[in-house]
Image (tube, rainbow over the protein chains, first blue to last red):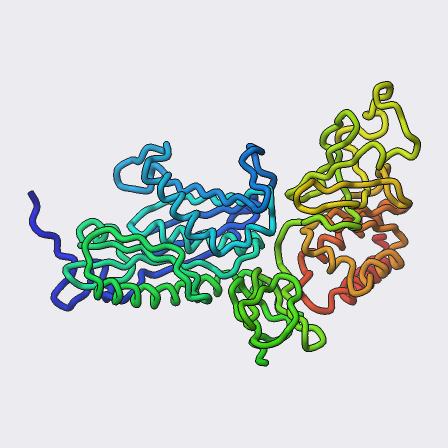
Length: 243
Length: 233
């Protein structure tokens, strides 16, 4: 067996050189797909994710339609080349679960009751994965939904927090997720101060959880700002002056 | 009662627009007395009281009395299904299409309207539990026989019409063509002069693209004058 993996060096920096409370570099692009009603592309560290949103549109099969609101459908999918070992393109148990979790994280933000009997479809394609893809997917999906012009209470931003070598850290990458003690994905509607997703995997004390949530909120606020900048800049660069 | 935006500022969903006793316009919502935007768009306050957001994107949701331009996609026993560029399919009954009662067991509905035909119609009923009902039994409504059809984003329709119809009446006057604007984002341009008809189509596309930039009506007008001077149209 290999020796112990060292996630923090003597200076307290992480394997990718970040501090404990530092996010990976994030780049968000809006409206990257022509055929979709709304789309977004996010790079968060080594993660690369494309999101396409269609709708509200007529729902097929018809019998799934709800008489009082739209149906939100999410498909989280990892490309076969997104991870070092080829992933089968068929939806795995994990992808089906993440699709549901992402849907539930986005649903509270949408005014689904405005479009009864229709569907809103969100397609999430992970092109390259390096830990924290569900959070990056939620962040990008919220931007794509806003780009599609779908009415929302607020954007949803997400980030994972966790424990590595006994310390609370923000935005875990793949290695930290795998060899760390805990991984806690958090999604929020930051403007309304509401949490829409909170999962936890691993061991953590109550005090540590409180500290972790505080750190997550901090990170989410930074991501929220980036989301809004990405959305607004798409239109600001095309129109010299507004009015 | 503070307002947190300047007129026509670009806002994202969840942006806090104002606090206090304001009226809610379109695309905003309130929690207690805090007013938030629900879409990506341009925030606006009217009469110092009504706060709304003009969306930059979105689909067409039918409203009663809207004029829409639709395409027949299916012929039923006593009705037609009409694509009206919306999540909801339009529904046109025989009694709303033909002036005289007919025996539907004897005649072929396809003789009147067939799949692919374009119609100008009006929404007579729509309540989100049933598909929108259409009629073509009024003046200016009915099957389209000639002209050019342009499709733009439904949220840009108010810009093509302009304030109290300023843009559309300017286009009609300057180019001498007839323009029917469907609220669903489809616009029919008819003119005896084919070159002018196609020029109008191009202008409408420009209006859609530059809808959020000010001074548009004047810019479009000068483009027409320039084209006339150069003898293009």
